[in-house]
Amino acid sequence: MTRIDRRALFASGAAAALLAATGLSPDAKPTRGGRLRVAVSRDHDQVTELARGAVFDTLTEVAPDGVLRGELAVSWQSANDARHWEFKLRDSVDFHDGSRFGAPDAVASLLSQEWFADRHFATVEATGPSTLRIELHEGNPQLPFLLANQSLSICPADCVDSALATGIGTGLYAARRIDENRHFLGERVASHYKDGQAGWLDAIDVIAISDPSVRAEALRDGFVDVAELPAPDGVLNRGEFAYHPSSQDIAIAARRGVGMPRVIGARGALDDGRLAERWWIA
Image 1 (cartoon, helix red, strand yellow):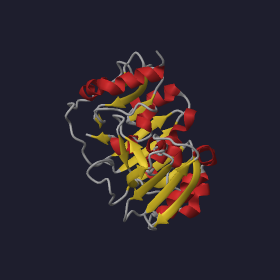
Image 2: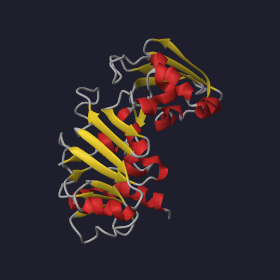
Image 3: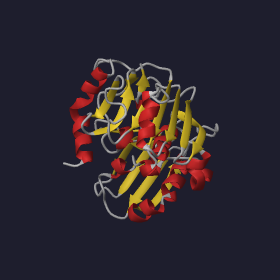
Image 4: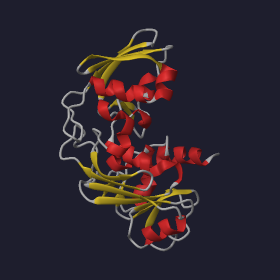
């Protein structure tokens, strides 16, 4: 069984144990406020992944339990051949710079990812301010799931070539600092269509630290709240920490008082890059 498989097993049931270890009951509800500090490795662009998940939305989202739901798209339908799709987009959504999100932004963002566009899209066009039509090279009923890929994040049409550097999205957190794969600081926007459902933190601060022993020291000494660790060395029996998925197969360690959902996204590390909007500080 691979490490990823073990994380998937954790996602299916062991989150309650981790909540108990942090002093929270499995039925604990998220609380609003606080700043979550996270130390990650420099491998796999973890800072970039967490920044994307905080700052940008996609058309659809796969919840931690694997259920597909709309994000910037509120509904969709396809013809019987699953080649022709119509998407209804969310109205009255603003980018962080104050500009209004619309179908042309979705078109430009999707087509900017040439590897995806060349492989899947025959045509992508706006048929109205908040309607989108997609035609595929061949039928694929899984298209709504594919559109949840973070690489297909939506940004203003005139920023698609520098989306991450510009940091202008429609996500729950506005970028205050993005140093690609080094440091990300995001602050909660004043209002958002996900209010009451996600985005419990006032701020998320992510720093990349190459040496795992230094990440462990930062967690142990209270400089960060969550650390990506390949082993519990440096924190095991050195304080009250929870280990994900376990102390024998550790991926993440968190200090007491860090809250997390009952089910953790299993498609990627750090809750599929959605940690900023899903976790909280009790």
